[in-house]
Length: 146
Image 1 (tube, rainbow, N blue to C red):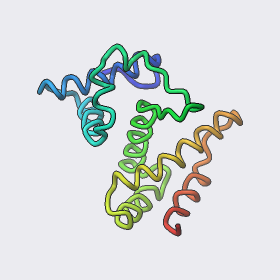
Image 2: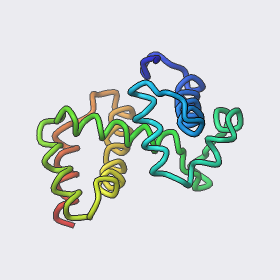
Image 3: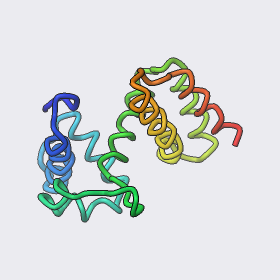
Image 4: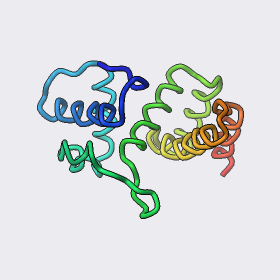
């Protein structure tokens, strides 16, 4: 299985499409493919697109027309799940657990958190600095109070 950071956009998208195809066909999955397929299973709104194979890989999702990029959305979910499993940044696991409890599901907690993670990554890219983990934690903590 290729490592995400070494892949082109097409290669990354192919990972999602292939994992979903293999899952739907009952084929064996590598651990990362299983994670991706499970996440896709939780997002039925993306099934049709991912089953379109080549169209999914080439699709554009311009934000100016309100199009949500399913690959970005799923990728942010994966990032949050990795953060929670490793508790990095320190404290994110407890915040996720608390938010999951309050909202009734880990998936809903991730949806709230991924907007914040996306903002932090965008700000980091724009400023040319590493993502601000403390600001990220602060914003996630704010979800607890809202």
